[in-house]
Length: 500
Image (cartoon, rainbow, N blue to C red):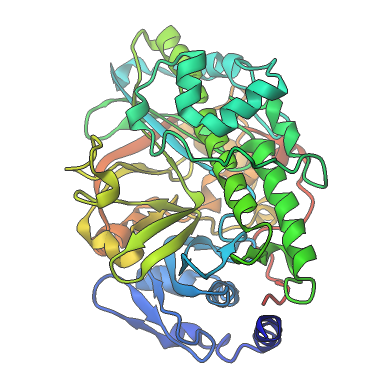
């Protein structure tokens, strides 16, 4: 019976009734967000945390992806954050709540880069110390310690054997600190460790080949991943932020489990981006273990990079870096929500935002303040450290994970002039890598204005601003600029296969 119902949902999604007028049906709630109720959303609440301008500029195709999110078994609510844009199956900047006991654990709403996230650090070094020469020296010093790009390998843990790698992805930051030593305060990581069942065996090999991640712990990756030296508006001192995830390990796990989901329900899951497992699936608990192992890898990856960057910072500027926070924005976790009960919270390009007094923060250093939330802009725009407020309950304790793309990679390559972009960055004083070449598909015009996106968050009472951070030096992998383009769908192309 369940299979027939799923197949019926697939058939219905082929002809959405309100794809052409959905923005006109969005209703301003008066509490900082729009509600969206159409013939297609059924009884699943949809909340859009957008300003009127952001709603108007949101891609029309996002509606189909919102509906995709509502169709997962056990869906209870869909939240759209202000950085939302076209993604795999569901939008990037999407929060999906499903029933924790009988609902789906969905894969597209976690994504390929399991556990991707941010790390931020501050210093007492005054911004005047970051002369143009020192900014370039910082970039060079970091690049000696951290490899970039899709093929980047670990510098610090380059000779890991299989047993030690297994200990790390199961033990998380707890094991890494105990076995390898650390120069950071582990209490400033969002999670020390995500539990992995002893009996879980990762699906090595296959299409995904997750084992390729073993040599990458402590490397940045490519695409929108970065390391950035920044000026804090509030303190006049130097900060550093980094964005990276679970590299080939998480991507390989996600790929292999996507294939398992499609094989398990071949008549229902016709698009791999929308694979899912329900509690009756033999892969349900295995996939949750994979998310935990991918998340642990990503946490360690960011903390190793923080250590390496701190070494480079001290070498160049003579001062120390203090970890502010480390946080993920591509995970599914079981949480309790006062309105929706016990739920699986899928955050795809969305960041957890627990305010002061949240039960999950009891006994932590954030119990009375709420934990920091790290929101990057483009590398020629403001980034932010936010502090969640009680109003975050409206968004399932979630906010955006960045400013969000507004120009696809293909469109950026076609429309932007490399020489002009490089000149603009030089004139602004932002040192990019060591050669001054800005990866064109990661240039500032590819992203929404950060202040506009943060306005939606603050205006809705979800969080307040603690630090505003302006880029001084930016480090990014350059494969895309050199033409080694990732095969598959182009983000932002306005064609979308029909999903269930």
